[in-house]
Amino acid sequence: MANEVLNKLDTAKTQLYHFTAVVIAGMGFFTDAYDLFCISLVTKLLGRIYYTIPGSPNPGTLPPNVAAAVNGVAFCGTLSGQLFFGWLGDKMGRKRVYGMTLMMMVLASVASGLSFGSTPSSVMGTLCFFRFWLGFGIGGDYPLSATIMSEYANKKTRGAFIAAVFAMQGFGILTGGIVTLIVSACFNAIYPSPAYEVNPTGSLPPQADFIWRFILMIGAAPAVLTYYWRMKMPETARYTALVAKNAQQAAADMAKVLQVEIAHENEKMEEDTPDKDFGLFSREFFKKHGWHLIGTASCWFLLDIAFYSQNLFQKDIFTAINWIPKGHTMSAMEEVYRIARAQTLIALCGTVPGYWFTVALIDKIGRFTIQVGGFLFMTAFMLGLAFPYHHWTEPGNHVGFVVMYGLTFFFANFGPNSTTFVVPAEIFPARLRSTCHGISAAAGKAGAIIGSFGFLYAAQNQNPALADHGYPAGIGVKNSLFVLAACNLLGALCTLLVPESKGKSLEEMSGENEDEDVSSSNDDTDVEIRGVPSKTLPV
Image (cartoon, rainbow, N blue to C red):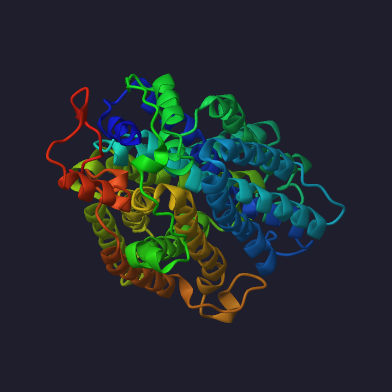
């Protein structure tokens, strides 16, 4: 009976509930992306509000250690959450853990916007504390959403549905920019202020402190709206059948949401699925999946070094090429508006389309092709930015730089940023699927931490006199782009360790149907239930 449940899942027609699951899981990722990336839109404002030195010719900026903490602490929480909730999802079940992560994100988003204190250090400390727990909740969403979607989907369109969940991240990034544009424009209209060089005090009205708080707190709204529907989702049939070993309950749960019929039989799961309960740290796991886990983790690690460096520090790169004016020529609210406008343009033209190209093509051309191609194109475009970097900084050449920079985001998302999320949810056994996805994702966040902390320092001007206040001299944006290009090239090589899962069942990829295939090959006849083989067959 368990084999029939799995076979029905693999061959089920695409139905309304598949799309419902995409929205329910995807809204978590919408919130994830909004919360993770909106901080980069307001860090300049935080520097002006809390660290402006009276009489200084330039507005204040966050000190290096504070900027690194504000940008990177959520990633530390995300890494921890990915490991913890990934493990918990395999132990307790996907559904039981799924609501915890969302509620944690809601509470931490609101609390981040309510970060108060009597000194700048206390405000930043409180903000970092709540953003760590925000990241912890976000971290749990990665393995759980990917695993749930992979276990609901049929094998024909599974890649597209998992990628569609992740593609909501693009809309989250885009919405963060749009919300910031609206909020900053409204405040600027109500409280008009001069440029810093004209009137340093007047360029920062007291009401500007509300801008970043509103932007951070709005991130809780979509998560609140989807909490009820997450709680209504049944446990995935694959977890119930293969891990909880209750095939009848799996069939009943699946019948609630998918239009399929399964004959009920009093059959023990132990007879249907042989005992192959090797652990994560066993020799058997390393033999079958060790190199796969190394491949998924290393690809995600190398990708996120480049991807998060680019995303979090777009404002610094755009300032370096003079696309965004220097801070002293603008008021605080105008600077927020210009940063948001630049990042929204990149998201609209490069980030969002890339995600949906992956959704459209992943089940046609495969994960491997998209991932290798994305890494190689990212390498090429970053080298195209780095070699003639001084050309791009000259007046009149900014448009060309922005186009090529946007293309690196397009091929990141029509490439490894999507596939590194999809593949770990497809190639590991059900009882370890969430854990292995969490480990792979945590490796990615380790890369994001390196990117967010490292790029902050590395991209500083090589001339100490031209580096930002409080920062040591770095290797410059040009050389930083060379380093990121090298990471992408290594990512393409590490993709060779990852198997192609296009068109194959989860059990075929994980090896969970190997024994059934062997035993059935010795039978004179195949047992069929309503015309469907009783085992999950490989394609």
